[in-house]
Image 1: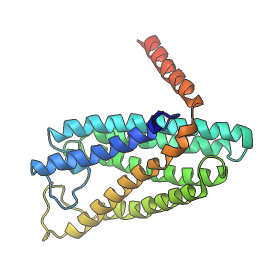
Image 2: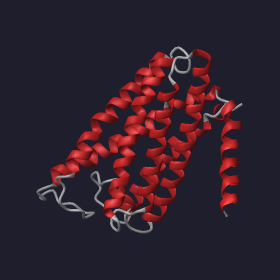
Image 3: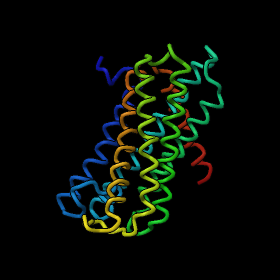
Image 4: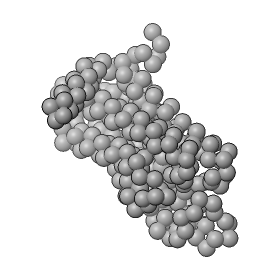
Length: 248
């Protein structure tokens, strides 16, 4: 059996590969078309103009749904462990899931409302995504330490804590420096007054984004032992279709 066929490890594996591709592919296309600068544009800038905007929206939507599925599987896994060991309070696990779902909602908002057309809504979605994403990583780091030695090893727990800390530290300059960026153009000049703030904010944004990718990378080995979540997830999808049929 191949490693990606064990348990539900294909969920975080797909999420990591697809999310990374979302950032990198759109960046390469935008650079090739000379729509953005080579040196650290905002992630959203790489998907601001067509055809990148179409691809960016589609890939971000898929990443959001893959993230939601991965977070739900993680929630059910911790819930099962809590029933047997009582190491994690249900409220903590539910809070982490809620934060994760809000982060996915933020991704959907970013994908739907483009930066150059509906800037305020797009920025609100980005803040929601980054803020709740960082909080999700922090909560899951705490949960990982509480369920140890079940689940992940102590090394993985510490790696998750380090990644969550890095994401938290990078989030603040991302949010603070962007308020000093007065221009919203895609091409920047090093002589612009706010260029330093733009660069600091953009670099921090890329760090936070790939911190999330690395965080879900640590789920892969743990998800190899998760089988029971498959039935629960399929039941959840079936319920969504059932309610949708009733509403229609």
